[in-house]
Image 1 (cartoon, one colour):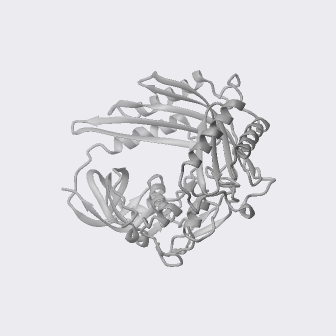
Image 2 (cartoon, rainbow, N blue to C red):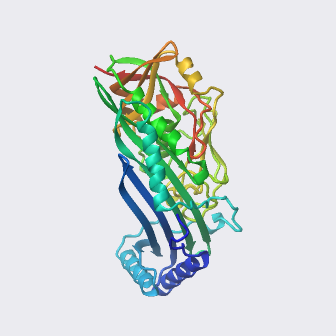
Image 3 (cartoon, one colour):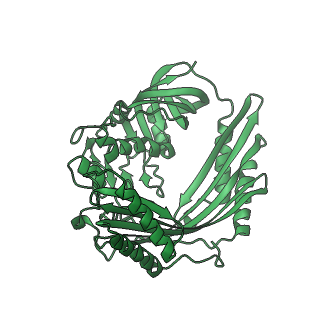
Length: 448
């Protein structure tokens, strides 16, 4: 954001507002209360065919309050941070709580588990001093690089530049106060390649906390162009059983299904194929998944979760064996367990890499499918059944022979995780899920 942009509120300003909310909740009769205030500003620019398609400045401030009257719960949100606005939000939350049924699992996190300051400096705040004109120029440069790859790049869905800076404070009536400030920047481009056989679309993107870590605009655009070009001449294929390789950018979603399956809400609803699998093998023995919440500049770094509970280093899967759940206070109480400090999800998941780079994994697969795109949402976490539309590249003798499209890849997630042959060392370091590419022994590929 450029220097002329409206500044974010200070930590002391946010503390004053959140203290007022908690005090108003106490006066109104709440037995417990929590409040969070967030403020953010951002700039998003999109261009298409060298022209500005959209330019948006964002400036937001919001307060969310949750009150408990015994085990009755009510919450409300407001964008009005005046004294009257905050008190009005508390009144609304209290009205909801008084007319809501009791839930014995409601309540704040156990005070003994709350994070204690001083909190570590995780180096998450890296503003980008870019103005709208500069952002437009960068997006145009990115798109132009994609279109220049080859004359067969004939269309564009545009390029976008986004920068965002946010600050927030969470506090509760047990005395916890936690402050965060951080940035997020991204660059993306999508183009269309065409030949006598038809058109193909592909894209690329980069997303980081520090602007200097973004992929160069011309390199990103060129990669998007090459990816679209590589998909020309895509063929359909006959139904078969074959190995499947998920590149790192798609492997993140693959691990996301496992994280959902070990989350508290899925467990207490008995909506997980990993129910009752604690301390049992659920992945191949080459798989170790670790949470590392205090990595400097990390996409998912945080000293405390959304309830103020201290985050900690954890091993979720150790050599294939499931070692822990992802629980907040409510789900933990429902399960008769203790929160793991994961209200809000996982904080920097590190998937232990193998020694192979992507090309070595392709050679190791020998014959099979590299997935480049997934379509649809055919994942059933209760049964583990997995069936999604896909496109990608067919491999023979360790080399790509042609692109493929209009296929479905199917298996059961339990078999997929147990059937992992190797994990690559091609890790994207700026993601909340840091994983290399994942090679799976066998799936059903349904074609024509």
